[in-house]
Image (cartoon, rainbow, N blue to C red; front, side, top):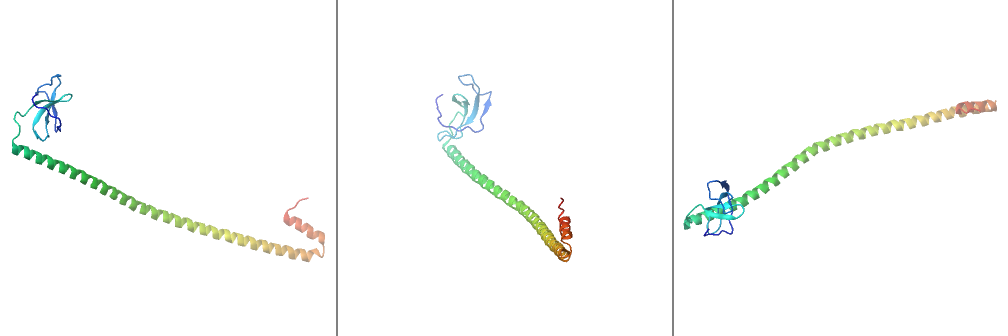
Length: 175
């Protein structure tokens, strides 16, 4: 182990039974290094101890190194763009959902308005009936009172006991 890697990102690491086992006898996984010194160079890695041995025996050439570093930078930039686009898509979907809710609540508001109008009409009709009932009751009471008073005046002078008996019968008073 002549090389030691302090920072590497594993991309597509899979256990490989053909790779050399670690000194702890655990299987190793083929992993790609993304360090400045060894970009794109593959090595075997133990999950517990890290670097074991290089799979690619030679270091990459200068142009390969540059190409891999540029590719890595492009991948990172595109990953950030994807993240930003995903966030924008989530926001757009949330706005669409909000619009759908407002549209559906618009029909709910219309339904509620129709129900409110129906209830208001029913209340107005009930108030008319109550008003008429009070009016007719009051009118009936006034007419009945006038008839009783007229009858009492015409009969009281003739027979006061009869007028008292008539009043008792009208008021349903029992002795």
